Amino acid sequence: MTTTTTATAAPTAIPAETPAETEAETADIFPASFAQQRLWFLNRLEGPNTSYSVQVLIRLDGVLDEPALAAALTDLVERHESLRTVLGEAGGIPHQRILTTAGSGIALRPLPAEQLPAEFARPFDLDADVPLRPFLVREAAERHLLALVMHHVVCDGWSMTPLLRDLSAAYDARHAGRAPDWEPLPVQYADYALWQRDLLGSEDDPDSLANRQLAHWREALAGLPGELALPYDRVRPAAPRHGGGVLDFTIPAELHTGLYEITRRTGASLFMVLQAALAALLHRLGAGTDIPLGTAVAGRTDEALDDLVGMFVNTLVLRADLSGDPTFLELVERVRVTSLAAYDHQDLPFERLVEALNPPRVRSRHPLFQVIVKLHNGDEIEAEVPMTGLTTTLLPVDTDTARFDLAWDFVETAAPERGGTLTAHLSHATDLFDHETAERLRDRLLRLLTNAAEHPELPVTRIPLATDEERGALPARPDTPAVIDDVDATTDHARPVARADTTGPVPGGRPPATRRERLLCSLYEEVLDTPGIGLDDDFFALGGHSLLAIPLIGRVNAAFGLDIGVCTVFECPTVDEMNALLDRAFAERDMDPDAWERTAAPAPSHVTGDAR
Image 1 (cartoon, rainbow, N blue to C red):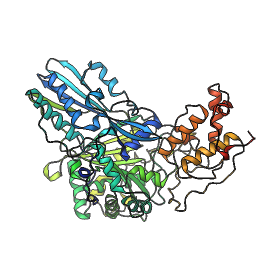
Image 2: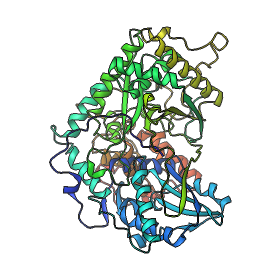
Image 3: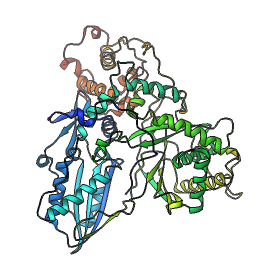
Image 4: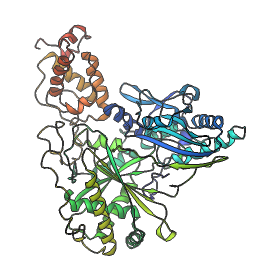
């Protein structure tokens, strides 16, 4: 089991009120956290899939007390409200709805072993499903498998420690014939969601923490490349298929020690050295001198949150500057400075950052970065979940999904002088990369790390990467567009992320000429709160973002009696393109394209007119 911390960073100072002091009043409905909002939107945009499923598999050897285990799971669900929280919607905005333990319907269910893979592959619909499914597989009289299938929206890596610890304590208590006597939790996840909004402050307050941190990120990410030129084997599809391949490998002990020598010379962390190495690798493979990588921070900036099960992780964008051909030591120092500044501004939710910077939207490409790197604390990789009378073992669960183009997960059990190991897990999107390419990336990273540890004063461009036989083996990036049928032909796939226009959106272009065009323009104006929108105005260029796309498409469906999906806004962001799509939708459904006029409510005054 691993925790999802990336590096030790001092948490941002929090306001006088803590999550415990802003405890939510007893109610069923609460605001969703920003992380929940994004995962809910992705579930709506892409449809239910297993990209964000979390599977925990525990082997139980010995005489199992099944009633005690079932009762312990009920205790666990009662203790952690997040496990019985579903997401609802009002006006296109998601919210948390906390169910009672009994009303959640969560219960331990027996499952034949052959059906377990199917349950792991069954996605969650966040609009309908509770986020936890527990199963018990009986392999023999004294051997069972406990499977917990969850959605990332209610748990993160850190959550595994309190979740399994509380399950263990509850089982021991129920096996002994009593209820668990654990201390009540100081807060619940709903309290955190409220406190998070209080912490960040109002977007209308220029001195709020959100606006102060956003100012940093606008400056730090100005001119960021829209997409890295990675050594793809295939062009990017219009819609992601989420298929993933994996490679596990070990960093040799002597190399592990050598990397620590670099940390001592530079004052950087091991994570920063690994980030610098990946940036150097991508630079050498043709990705340019401006390398943005994503990472995750735990997001638990108050100790009251430590024992909660929930989704707290925030995503940061770490930018590496390789201009001027720095030595590896110089690159590590640049990375150290940039990373420390990022940690000091880690409270701004990634979702809010994406909305503010408004990068070019491509459904199959992660915004702001396509490669992520994390360093996990692996002290508990082989940890057991102690249960009275049982030998318990956490089992690895292989997944075949990918959330990013490339994801590098490093796991360190301890520093090398304490006998620790450093291993890595490389996940690649099979839409884009072959397994052989992933193997070559792994081999080149290991060579780069080895040679950089031995000669850190070498310029990055002179660090040997490949043998003579392997030189040139990595395929060149295709000359064809990075995206097929998903962006306008004039769009540059590597267009930098521009600074947000502080003067606000300025609509213009051709005015609407027909009643339907006028109605569509009015719907865009209503959602964007921007008058004067024309046929050629782009929803995203005028400040629209992912969450606003949902109320827009809801209004379009209601106005025209259709059921088109939210992805339509990404494919047809202008009014003119949306209007053309309506023609296709009416034809595909064999609907009268003028029927909406006979059933619609009276149109606003600026929508009326005779032309059609």
